[in-house]
Image 1 (spheres, helix red, strand yellow):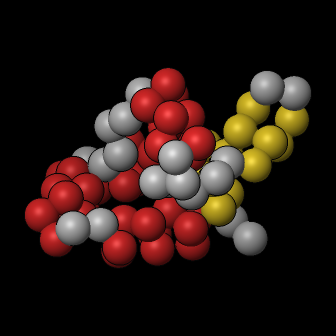
Image 2: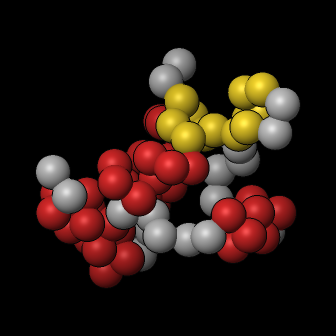
Length: 72
């Protein structure tokens, strides 16, 4: 399964939330849970991030896709 790190969330998916905000969202079950890859490093399963974006309200999901396409 492919993993994506925090540093790649913005350029690949347009997710601009800070680490703190993502931690809050994960705790509230409003963002996919991360997995620990080593020491203090975390990542997310790509398919869970894509499913999360697909499940967002239409306007928000479109913003994420537009940011991803603009960065390419």
